[in-house]
Image (cartoon, rainbow, N blue to C red; front, side, top):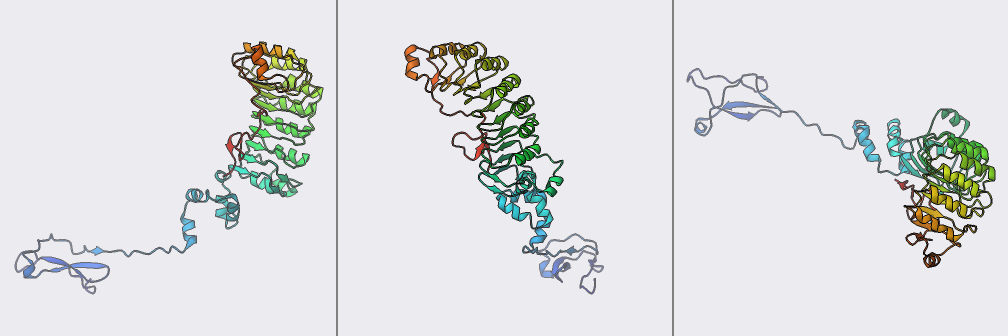
Length: 397
């Protein structure tokens, strides 16, 4: 301490009174007290005596090198990195995952890959499965082209016991082989809404659809290859089904019989339009008796349906709101007056059968809107102007 120039604080023995001190700089890290002159006694206050080993130490402030990027990425927690990279597009996330192991873990986190829109894209082998395995819940693949095979043998072995987390998937008009479609659906067991508009199906594909027991919406509009076995696999297993669209699927009479005999009584919206010669009054009466919860029914272009079906609806479907009977020429317009007994019935589509003026002249269904909907929206994923969403769920980031 003497070498540093620090003197201990001592009491003046001669005058028997404490000395007056002031702070003097003796170095960059230390300060000590020194005697005050006689001229400063009147201006300074008497300080308290302190111990000789007490002095002030000032720490040096080390400057942080902000140019050292690796240092800061290593110190940031994963939660903060996730909140930063969540604003990046998917293409940038793919590039980020190639930097290092830690950024790969962050860039492939499930919270960043909850939805994806691959409309019209060309997907090479393995690419679709690489994306879906990251935890995608909402997938829109409308019009996409999937290369065959869907997975390489090595990736198929790696994903043998993997089940995807997809819940909402739109595969409308997708270009994919039947074998690859069956393999893709075999990895999906959590589907709630599915659209296969204009796809080619098989018994294996229908069996994999039926394995999704929580499925509530299914769109099979204009699909081909549906057999009685495939139809039974779907309607007998999907007990939660509420909306089903099988319009213009060219079902034979046996397939229609399997549909109306085994469909869940919980069904609320059903589209059977386009079954020209295969759907008749007997099938409709069986369906109406089995499913009293129906709210919306579309049987347009079913030429074998007559007024018997309308009378049965008026006696059983008390929750019916919407009915489409476009171009059903065997239905007598006067039979539509029986629908007035339904308390919630509010909309009727009967193009080429009746007009609004005709019903007003006959005073039939005065409080019902006539011919306001040109297209059916039952189970369809995209309706109206929301072209980037499916079932009112946003697909793009």
